Each structure stands twice: as C-alpha cells, then as structure tokens.
Length: 83
Image (cartoon, rainbow, N blue to C red; front, side, top):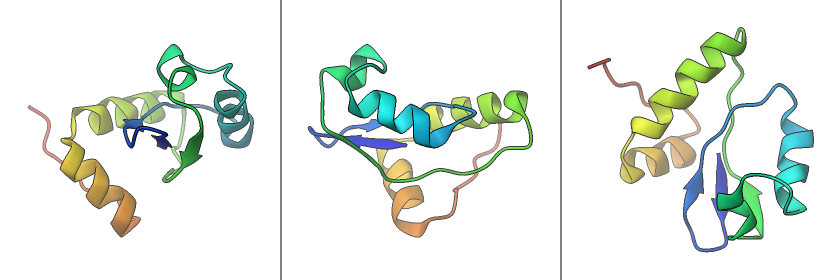
C-alpha cells in the first residue's frame, strides 16, 4: 500500500515490490499515483501465489479508510468476512 502526497492510500498487487514502488515513484505507475507524487510504501504483505495476492488486494480495497489506516499502523492485516 502506498501513501500518496495528498494522504490517500493506493493498493495494488505485484510480483516485484521494489520494482513496482520505484515505477510508481518515477511517475510511470497507475494514473492515480502519477497525479499524486511523491508516494511512500507504507505497508505490504507476502502472498502464496498471484491468485491469493489478487484476492487479498480486492479485500483490502473493500476496507474502509479507517481500517486501512489501522492495518498500516498495526502492521498486521485486519480481516473481514466475505459478503
């Protein structure tokens, strides 16, 4: 998860975290982050495989901003039941 210049949080999935953060930092990432540089990595977690990573990304995107901030500050992921 990246914190953007405006304080917003951007969530994505990648198989190469360092490369992806650098790409976003150079303004070559998603249009969302490109418009909100600079960005800072504030949280990440490993996944077993791409499918698991994409499911977790979707779950994090469904969290409220408050829950995302708790996740970042606690350094452990809050879990929510599937709807």
